Image 1: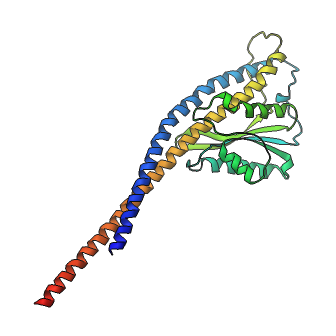
Image 2: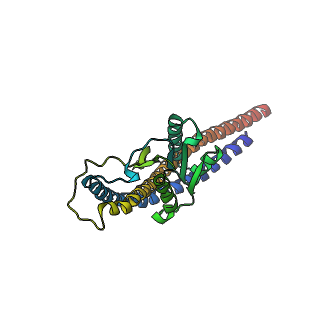
Image 3: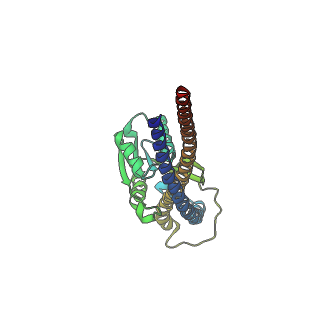
Length: 285
């Protein structure tokens, strides 16, 4: 009985240590979430304004032909996948990776029909283990990534579409809704959506609308990628905070259950000792 009580007590101590760790990680994730959410929200107005300008030029200028605006026969597809470098974030990585694998399996019959660009160690490791073609990767992002941190993979993804290496580019990431809701999202990045319905602003451009679009379109695509990375960071911290909160609650439940078992075992041991004392006293009388 004493051995069983010692084992229960050891388990209680172990669960208490785990609870302290998960509670601390929950608080850290909550702190980082606020900053990541602010960064994601701050990036959206810039992307929206850039879209407005690009759409206005494209809609107001007839006969503009740019590879990023033109649909062509799809022979090969690119996927830019945003994941995290670390785990312990619930289903954050699993959900987005499951989504991109579903897309690949539904759209393609051969590995030669697609290429992958990946941000985050979890995604890189996932695709590497399956021997899938990774064109460019970025790992080791900070908790507050700058555009410079992902510029190499963003530029490579856009340039490979422009030069015809593939005919369609999808962005796959977790769209941040709130701390408990992150939606795995597949967005067609290139060719860009039809902007014919965009309101036309009365601007004059130098040297020409075509020249301005030549510069702005790649920057707009790269901005959308960066915005998705910021959304992904906010989603990561939201998912981690929720996962650690659930882990803390589960640890508390296990501690309560083990404490109840310990008290019952202790009561049984005391009752047994009393019974032995009473039996011994009766034997002597």
